[in-house]
Image (spheres, rainbow, N blue to C red):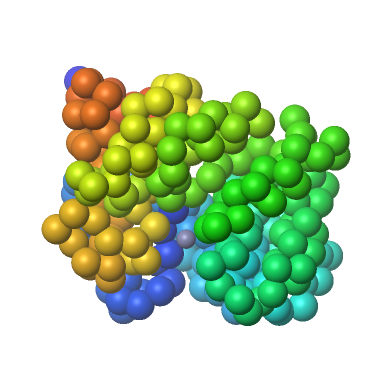
Length: 260
Ligand SMILES: [Zn+2]
């Protein structure tokens, strides 16, 4: 009989409080069957931390510049070299966040576009962060050079089915995390049912996003099991099924052998 295994496609092990207890965090995760993790970077300074973490089994790196850090000068050649040297599985996390004012929108857009071009160049998927900028992001991703050529995931998706549909139409995956564990997050819960089974991913975004019963900062990769159970209930199936389909989807998107 196969044991249940979960893939947390988005967690920041290099952030406090997780970074002080990496071994404990990984032990608790593995004990619950959470055996694969993707660790996306935020700013160039975290690239090295991510590369060191990715030496551990089951941890896959993604390097990029988060919109919050988009005021850093981005040397795309440097990013390409770092992605290749670390065998990164994605460019991430990247995107647009219009709920913050600094960096300004133009700066964010420029750095986002630069990184989409890096993803095209290296044929890597992207991990997208988007807040308050969905129209702008969809319009960029719909441009001729990107549509059908850029693949990836919208992380921490918590919006409604109409927006979900538009990203799905562009070929994107949607990753669900803590939001779906909250009864009041009606849109997120509807979208978690709406998304086709070959486009859904699980994540925690630990330690950045809380969950029902867990404050921000208390969330660890092990809690992706809670997300899976909640989604299983919403989709009227079981956690084993959700763990299985999201495992295969993550391996497909990020080019990882599912049986390694
Ligand atoms: Zn994140």
